[in-house]
Length: 346
Image (cartoon, rainbow, N blue to C red; front, side):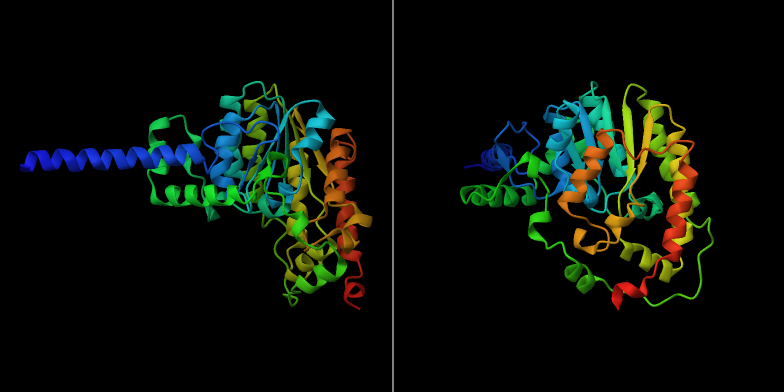
């Protein structure tokens, strides 16, 4: 065989191998990029930042519930049942506002009939600037260019992941979409568990300025309020989740409590000023947040609490208004400062 013939043979074999690899990845679909999951079908759900792009593109829905790990244990079926509309859950662990902005943009491009969005604005993401972001979505999966998806289909990681997916499916380790990324069944929710895992910081002896987080809060609220301006046909429900009393113990000892509470009040005031936005504050569920049997750590609460929060919002309860917003935050502020934290540990 001459050099030209050898080159053509090698090239043809290489292209065939690449085509087989891409076909194998598409067939196993480890990142759910190809087709939608029908009711009753299962998947492995291993990486939210990759898999969400395919779920957002391919699933049928007209409502969304979005958030960080605080939302991972919510079930989309709660909202589907309560709203009477098919709902998709979008969750990114330790997510950043810009990531949810990218996800919502894709959802609205592919599903322009979306009319309801629930978003969990936990204080941890409210008070950090996107310039500090440590993780990033795979942009090629969230854009409208199908050709750059080759980066995924022809990668060695994708082939390895496809083989793993095929193997694990044989053992029945997959779950249905409603249980995607749910982890509450693997953890104990109890006072003993929370206190065992809680590392109480030493008092800092100083307090951050009360406006320390306002710049980051403004940056993030510009994005959230931008959603409401960009999609006036959509009703947005933004809620502050019920962090446990240990979170406030930590913030008091670190000297950040007032700065966080000021950021929460700033965010709430802006949200209730949006015509198609509603805000709910569950940070002040005092009976709930002081009962550590509702938690598995200082911020993640049980399925019972999550379900109650979801149904409360869908019922229109605990909503912030011009009349009650300031008093609700002030009541929370007094509670946070006056609480007997030492009694928790004694």
